[in-house]
Image (tube, rainbow, N blue to C red; front, side, top):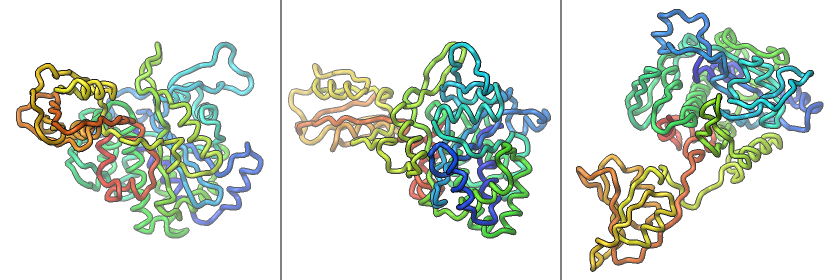
Length: 448
């Protein structure tokens, strides 16, 4: 099962609603841990059980399943039922597992591993307890879906919308789409959400695409009236609930109350975010490459949810850099003909070669000039952010390095901040994340 399955589980909660239940949901908080609101853990399981060889070929799912969670979203519904915060937890997050049985606890040192491995050790119950241990939040309801049947479920809903501002191709998932907004069937949606080899390495961009797809699918269902009343909501629920499993604490009445509340939210009252990451390639013997959460920022995220506050606009979760960089300076090689500018850019993380010894004796008038090869516009913009006022000049057949010619005008090098969390996982509202919205077609290709 791959990433798109999260849309199925989340949508099942949305579509099930047929009446308001804010009082019932609020009441279940009173006997808990002091947290406000309702938390729903939505997971998708990576399993190819039951898929025929032909189905695996058609879905580009020929690899071996891990019997682990491949998608994980924590949906927080506010106590007043007027806001939802949907937080993606990347599957490679390095966490301490909860005990597989309570009681007794397992003797010995705490077990650490990728958060997706909790399912293989103890299925849904251990997954829930591990998320609770890692976040400090109580999980009220658990929804799980598998790989099989998702394609047909998306088809039954009339397809999905995907968008990108450049062509996307990934041989592993079978994705091959042109720039623009596309209506795709279940197979196409699955390929889009599973794509792993696009742009930057890692999981954040892929998670953002999952969020975007869920958001647009929900918006379309609402616009088409699939959530407009008890009859239409029940019809949609019957389509989806065939592929969704719940825990013993979650019944149809819970799904109805949650779904009805979520279905009435305005886009600017629905938030999407990803857990902030500090280390993107933390190598652990016997575990592999993992993601380590940013301790202070992730703690601020869970604290906001516990206190029932919005996560967008909270600078403790997502600091606002004075000069953001769209690409990593560590991947940009620069030749500079001024020693002071070269040193300042080097402190900024650029890979700098100081060519000041061969600089012209008379500086040209004007600001610095940045020369680069066509196609390197994103990196050129990052370098220009560090050199305010610099003129950009694309030069055909230029090599992969950037040449900076410093003019007679004084140069003040600014400190730029590259933060992948800002680029791929910053908290945003649904209206900005939607295809065609304020974020338009920019988020999809920013992934991996």
